[in-house]
Amino acid sequence: MCPKTCREGALAILLQLREAGFESYFAGGCVRDRLLSIAPVEHDIATAARPEDIQKIFPKARSVGEAFGVMLVRSHSYMYDVATFRSDGPYSDKRHPDQIQFSDAEHDAQRRDFTINGMFEDPVEEKIIDFVDGQDDIDARLVRAIGDPHKRIEEDHLRMLRAIRFSARFEFSIEDNTAEAIREHSHALAGISRERIGEEVKKMLIDQNRGVAGWEIQYLGLDRIVFEENSCMNAPTRLGRLPANASYATALAAWIIDRHTSKAQVHEVAASWRKSLLLSNQTCNALTEILTLHQAFLSWDSIGVAKQKRIAASSHCMDSLAIIQAEDRALFVRIKQTMTQLEKSGVAPTPLVNGNDLLEAGIPPSPWLGAILDSVYDAQLEGSIAAKEQAITLALVIYKDFLGS
Image (cartoon, rainbow, N blue to C red; front, side, top):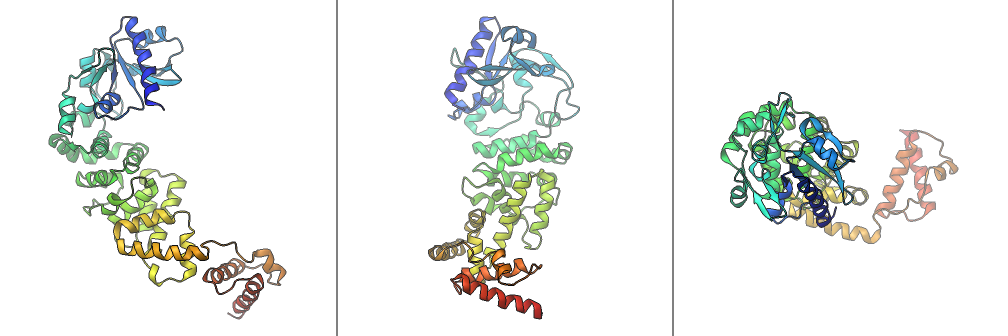
C-alpha cells in the first residue's frame, strides 16, 4: 500500500464527512506514526457521523461492526474503517464492550488503550487534537495506559501484549504504573484465545526488536501464560542477536534454545509451543528443522563431509546458522569457512543412481532400498565414488551386508 495514496484516500472520505456537517479526524495509529516520522500504511477515521449517516454519504459502505459504530468505506482503491465517536461500557468478554454510547471526540479518546494511540489529527488544519497527553508520552518515549491502567487492562487483557509490542517496536519504555498493572494482571491473559495471543507474539517476533519484546514478556511474567510453561528469566540473547530479517520460525527456535538448555527437551517444547501459539504446519515444520539443524551444527567439527553437505543443502540451513552466529561466533566462522570449501565440490549434486537403477542391478524392492540409496549418496558426497558404475557396485556390497546381518 502506498502511504501517500492511502492518505489521499482517507482525506477524501474525511472531507466528504465534513462537507456533510460532521466533525471528523484521522485517529489512532496513523497519527502516532506521523509524529514518529513513520509513514502510516493505513488510516482510520473517527467521526461524529453515526453509521446511518455514513451509509447515506457513502451508499456502498459496509458494516463491519455497526453495533460499535464501525463502517468500511472504499476510496482510491483502499478500504478504510470509519468509526463513530463513542464511549464504551463494560467488557464482560474481555474483548468487546457490552454496549456503547455515541459521544464526542474527547470521550472517544478516553476509551482507547494507550496515550500514543489516543490522539486525533486534523489534516486540513494540520494540527493534532490530543486529549490524553499522547504527544508528551511520545516525547518521553513511554507507553502509558489512558486513565487507570488496571481498568484498561481489565477491559481487554490482550492489551498487556500490545503494550509490550509497542514498547519494543518503537524502543519506548512501559510507564511504571502500566507495567505494574500488567504484572499484576498477567494471569488473566489465560482468558484470551490462543489465536489472538499467537497473532501478537508473531507480530513481535518478526520485528527487528524482537529481543526486547521477548525480555519484556518474561520480565512481566506473561511467558507463563503465553507458552503455558514455567516462567523463565534466562536472557533471550540469541533472540535479540538475530538478523533483522530473521523469520518467525527462526525467532521461535532461538527463543526456545534461550529458554531451554537441554538438547533433548527442545523438540518437546516446540510441540508444546505449536499448541500454545497455534502455529501453522509450515511454521512448525520449519521450527522443527531449524532446531534439528542447530543440534547438528553444534557437532559440526566432528561430523563427516557427507553430513556437512546434507546440512548445507537443507532449506533452513541459513536460518539455523543465524542462531549459531548469535551464540558462538567462532563456531559460525568455522562453519562458513567449511561451507565455502564444500561448495567447490558441490553441496547437493544429482545422485549417481536412483531406485530404478538399483532394481535393474538386481536389488529387489525391500525396506532397505532407501537406506542403500542414502549410503551410496553419502559416499558420493564424500567424494569416494564419482561414477554410476562405482555407485552400483557399492550398492550391491551394501545390499549383501544387509542380507548377512
